[in-house]
Structures are given as structure tokens and as C-alpha cells.
Amino acid sequence: IDCFLEDRMKKEYFISSPKTKAGLCNRIKSLVSCMQIADRTGKTLIINWLKSDGFNCEFSDLFSNRLLHTNSSKLRIHKIKEAHDNYFITETWRLLPPNIKLENIQNGNHEMIDFQYQETNNTVIETYIPYFQSLQITEFIDRQVNEFAKTFDENTISIAIRTWIDAPNRQHLFDTEKVLKIFEENQLSTFFISSDSEKLINLLSNKYGSKILSYPKRTYTGDRNSTEGIQDALIDLLLLSKNKKLMASANSTFSEVAWWFGKCEANVQII
Figure 1 (cartoon, rainbow, N blue to C red):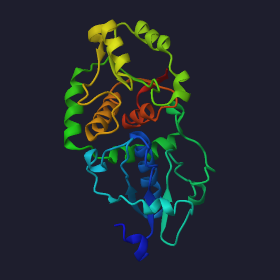
Figure 2: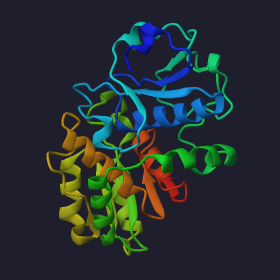
Figure 3: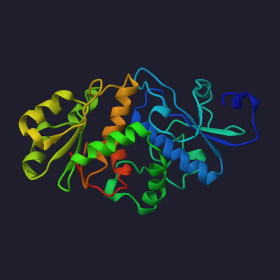
Figure 4: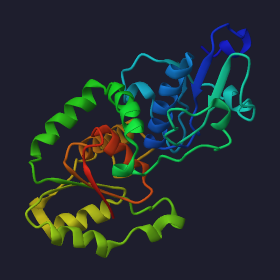
């Protein structure tokens, strides 16, 4: 596929090329944004899924969709130019408005529709749910999610706790006392916990015992440097989407994408 840059094929391409170190959910948001725009504009979608030290996992280790795919660093040479004769590249991490003009993607001159949850416009929801649902999870991940989800009941609350271990400038967004208050206010519930902090999960498990449910990791919590670590993160993400209530970390795309995978049905509370 890389040869299309040199061959200048007649087809028009729309290329989803998230930043090399983009995390799982930034990549997913980029992909579904580009899927809907490619469909709307009649272009052929290509994904550029470069692995890195911060994201060491192939697309095919997570999803089984048969999409045109490239691993080309050449695309980044051209990223400053917004449009070419036959291909258009975006590095967005955002959900892009359904009616966005191509020339407004790179300059950010468009409506922001991220992190709105229940306030999200119905047109946006109706546009994007089919694209999130079209992502075909691999058999292994699907099996793990369905098996673990059997531990949930109608009172289980999903809680995505981002302590921002890897982002010191955002650590002020995490408040331990606010998290503990949630448990005290919902004493009849069990909680499925996904977090970037194994220490916090252990603390909660020791304090609340069987009320705490967490998917066991094959490597370690927050591992981005192995296929297993990223697969386990996707399993966590999909499990978060299974319950009627979602406690979401502010400004976290992990919480946000879990809500989208749940067809926007969960009642969300920001923590």
C-alpha cells in the first residue's frame, strides 16, 4: 500500500494517521472520525497505525476489520500540507463533527464535540454509534470480555479512575477522597474498576473486598509496551461499557470511548 504515495493513483484516499505515541482511545477516536468522513466524501480509508514505545501493538491484535493499512513514516513528511491531488491526512485525536469541511480538520476550526456525554447532540450520536459498533473485536478479546462480564449484575457500576501517573500536569484532576465518596454513597453496588494505578486498585480491593471487580492483567496495570498490555486495556474499556452507570475521569478519552462503545446509554458522572 505504501507505493500509493509514489504511484499517485487515481483513487482519492482519506488517511487516519494518529500521532505515533497516541494511546488506544485517541487512535480509536481518530479512526472512527476518519471512517465517517471517508464515507461522506466518497474517499477510500487507509489507517496508518505506527507502533511506538508508548503503544506497542498492531491494529490486527485488537480488531479484525479488513481495512487498507499502512505503516509508513513517509506520511508524516507530508502532514503539514493539508491536501494533495489524491489523498488527505489527519492526525486528529478528536471526534470530528459529521459535517466538517476537509479544510477545517487540520486547523481545528470546527465545533468541539468531545467529552459531552449526555449533552452530545443526537445527530452526532446517531452518526457515530454505527462506526464504533463496526469495529470488530478479535475473538480472544471478545471471549475475555463476555466471560468476565458474567460477574456483573444490574447494580454494578463501572468506574474509570485515571490518576494521571504518566501526566504530572494533570494529576490535580484526580482526588482520592472524591473516589472514596462514590463507594460510600453506593453501598449496595459492586464496582468494576479500571485504573492506571495498580496501587489504587489494591487499596480499594483491600478496603471494600468482593465489592471490587477488576480484570486481571497479564503483565502489569498501565502497560503500553506490549501487545498483551494493550489488549488488556481494550478488554477493560469494553467491560466499562457494559454497565448502566459509568463514573468517568475528567478529560479522559478512555472513559469517553467506553461510553461510546456502550452506545451512549450509560448514565455518566464525572469524578
